[in-house]
Length: 239
Figure 1 (cartoon, rainbow, N blue to C red):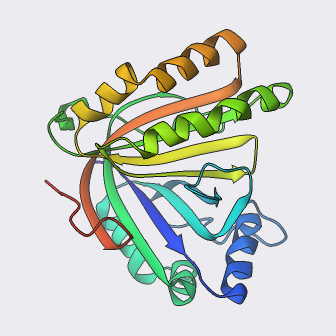
Figure 2: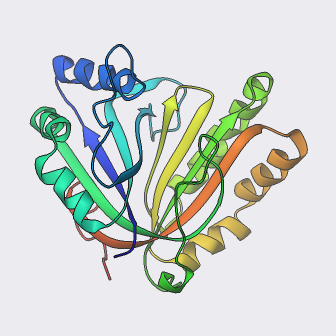
């Protein structure tokens, strides 16, 4: 069985549950206790990330929404985690909304934390079918003011695009470690945005010219399945 990736969006409502979710960010880094996902069978790579205010791309944190990214040996390993793992069961008990996307990487380049955890299967890509995209970057400290001057324009252009189903800004650390998760009606529509959007093309150019990133990664996925409930995804088209 091929390896798969999951992205789980988590929403919390009460102050108590939001506070608990925030502490889990530290726990995933081993602060102050051991990472609760250490030794999880079949988990090759896992990250819990917070989100930004507004549409997820603001500088202020949004303590209500988090995202867990997992990369697994196979689908069975992911299913066992979501069904039985103690940490995830504690998470479920505290959330007021959640959704999980089961994904197959079809193209990837760059690094995340010094490695690329995803294995691409290019044969799984169909440009006519829905796709998901994860981008992730570590911004050079001295470049932060310059970088953040351009983020609101670019995120707004993504948010208003008719082919965008969902987009959210997330990250392991605020301000200087940034990631995005987005869903598109098709791979073709996503590529058209990437190559035709004036804002996107300008940011790509500036990224190269101004050397914003210490590390960056881009991965495109085929969408295998979607479970749960998330605002705006009632009629999400799964192939």
